Image 1: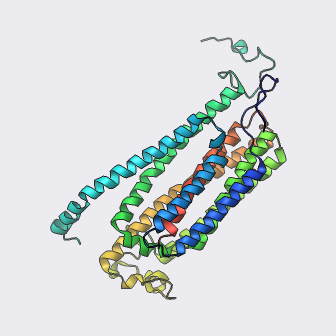
Image 2: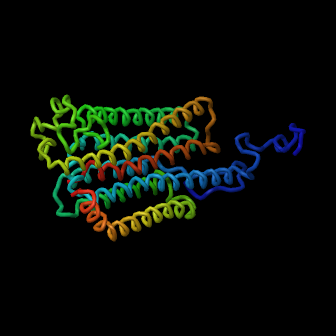
Image 3: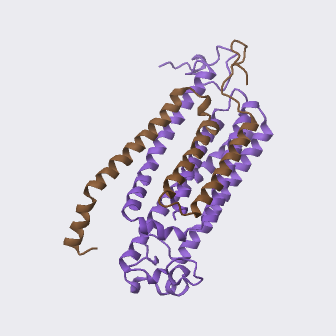
Length: 117
Length: 258
């Protein structure tokens, strides 16, 4: 698609993605799926989860940028999406931090008062 | 408020497209407003799912060995096939948006149909996986037929008889469930609680997406969509891609724990 042609009677909206690009993105996604299954069967000595998450994030970026055409949208739209990711990060950070602070106390309490493990 | 409905603005401009709602200046403004709306909705969806992802994180960090043990009861092959099926459906839906923008009606119908078939296939595979778990008793802790009870006497007799997870009949699993430490065995149900909540909520979203695609197919057949009017297709696709996006994270988090 060349530059948008305004004032030409019919208004142009949206951005048409070339089919070849869609095919490439789909191919990339399938390849990355294969890669994550492959690395999933290996023992990466504690790096299994980070590696799987990096691959998943790459796949998610491909879907967001091209299938959801964030790359061609107004930056504000991308910002809305990144905001949601930011707040999920905050949610996770606070909960894990809180659990890290108190989980020991909870375990100690349950074993003392409830006869748990 | 005016009572003369026949001239409140609609009929004045003969060049005004009929799919341009009266409260919008232009098709571009209508499209941008709709796009902002759907993205704000997707934001709420991400946050909605995040509660379950946080629950997952909490349980996994508290019981890493439980997650490692329990994950082997999920069928990685089925999960991987389902991932590819869902990616394919995302691809055909993205293609459908292109078709709508270019006014290719029959291709649009075909791509929406393939997307719908893939969605159905995904749910079919999910159904096979779920029924296998009910058959095996690999269920959440509170379920009556679950095999993850501290006291083996609480496990239903028929499960003890036929569940291959309980007996490890083919030696497929690292340890038979019946040989687990009772306190540990009880906790394995937590993994399946998380599994059923996450995949169940995701499955509900797939089913809503299928209803959406049927609606889009009917509207396409009616000839609703064209180069200046494809908003519903585009926004439906955005929702569908988000459902795909969530599965992209669910698959390694549930199926690929080693």
